[in-house]
Amino acid sequence: MTDTDNGIEFSKYYRVITPDEIDIDREEIFYRDKYNDIINYLKIMLTNHEETIVQSYNKFIQPKGAILINISVGTDVVDYLKLISKNYYLNFYDLNQEEIIKKPDEFFRNFTSILENLIQVNRTAKESTTEDVEESRPTENQLQENRIRGIFLINQENFSNVKVRERNFLELFMTSFKDKKSMIKEGLLFIWINNNIKDIESNSRLIFEVFDLFIKIPLVDKIERETIFRNFSEKNPKIVFDIKTLVDYTVNWEVKDINHLLKVGIFKHFLNSELNESSNEITDVLIDLIESGEYIPSISSEQVKMEFLYNNVHENQEYQDKKFKKEGVALTESNNSTELLNQIKEERFSEFMLNQLYENAVSKNYSELLLIIDKMNKEETLEENDRKLLAKYAFILNDSPKMAQINLEMAKKRIDNLKRAFGKH
Image (cartoon, one colour):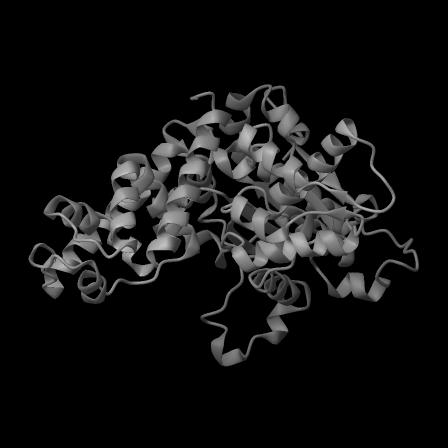
């Protein structure tokens, strides 16, 4: 295949970064457990994968050289993949967003041809591997043994809003390449990063026809956020902030969101007063950036929009209602709040889902719930309407009244911050 077809230059739509051009500090990567799945897979693909597979299992394990990763925006997974490319001396290919946004229709219309052109270019490079190998590079024998020459990444975050004839970008790729079976034979490892689980769910039947693995990497949790703040603090001891407070302010944030917030906070502190050599307390500056909407985490555009939050909890609340009926919890027969607490045994939710539930409750019945929780705290009698409303938000009963009040107020603050950020205040 030529580099052009009908006057279209395919190669302009992707770019190559050589290992020597990659400048990533491994100390800046926040390693999480699921990153092990990525590196373990790549190691097998890069080191004679056919020889590592027990012969009796080779009918089950036939690597295609492609993985699908679902992860939130604002992570450092791309930097991690670039670091792997550098360490294994692989070319790193990705899509050229600057060219694509100029003519998106042309790009998607020729998407398959563009990828095939990239494969052909890589095949040519593979066949003409240079004999000039620097000491820092693998030996010639290693290059001969390792057939993989590059990693090709598609980061869907850059094209999340693009629809192609009512099909999403991921679906377009899977339907185009499901019969091509293996990119690994062409010397490429293919990695697709997806930020919208709905795209995957709607095309789940195709995933394993194209990809070897689907790796789902969760949001950093409270402990991990604390670790990110603590790591920054240890590396920059002259910058002082209240870690616990900021952990509570950054629920649903990712690692790059947190690091960017800290850098912006330091710069704003510098503008307002001189940075000194001993100690610079920036907690208030950081909180002001968040509450004023002058710093908006990247996750806001995907997972914390108001409609997204409210729709996500609806199904879960229906499940709770059915659960109460099934277990025969007679909410209307008890007037004692302590007895009510003992009757209801609710499941524990992930931190992310619990935050969504509280935010949904705040958006609909904030004032009423505060009054009910206050009554419970004082062990006062709950009215029938109180009990009915509480049954809709039974997850609240997992927390003590004081903690439930704190969670409600924090959820209210997050919603207000979002409204302010999107100009709704």
